[in-house]
Length: 263
Image 1: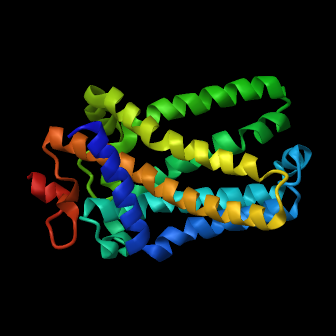
Image 2: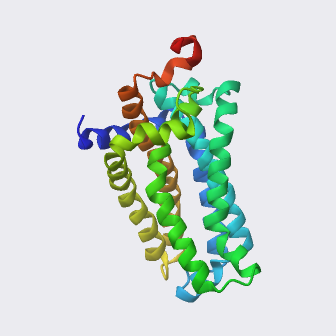
Image 3: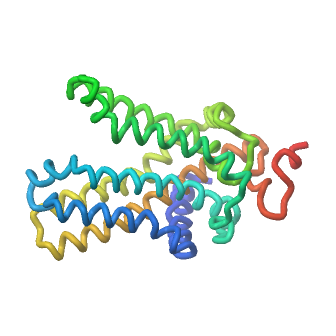
């Protein structure tokens, strides 16, 4: 399968998730919109000075944390939806096996959330200069960008209640296709990221009605972008699993556990 076909699948099935799981899809969208409401009330989009001043608003940062946690949950919901054949019931189902396997995935995400979003505040409290903390933060963000594709199979299989891959196994199995996985991740996500930041910068100085409209569009974009990220991980994970002879859906409803299937 070509990368173009992978991209078409990623974007199409992300849209299908939004249509078939509207409540799950709208949870991070709603939190993003609440964050934008806090930003608008704080004058963030009045001018460049307002954007800088509102950037460190504690309420805005708190809502940002809640939104990111919701996007972590999308990693569970959307991965199950995709692994089990675009099944909304699978996305909604709370599978104790999957929850147990997915908790370390959540912990991993929370670690990076604290490192990236709260890193500058922690550095300031420790007396580290802003220049040094900025260099460290940029290095951490770049390292995360290049490392995360290696964990796609772990995250996807965990959400599917399949223990067959794991953290180290995901890295080992993905190495042969690493550059394809990295390229797919960048091509799928960068245009959406550019659009996300472009909407914010374009909103500065616009009328109130236009700002609210742009932020509503951005909230939907963020929700879609979160699903697209998971769909990209799923496509990578499926390729990795196929190469290794592993059925990602082996622990699905009505099927034997992954361990039993491997026995």
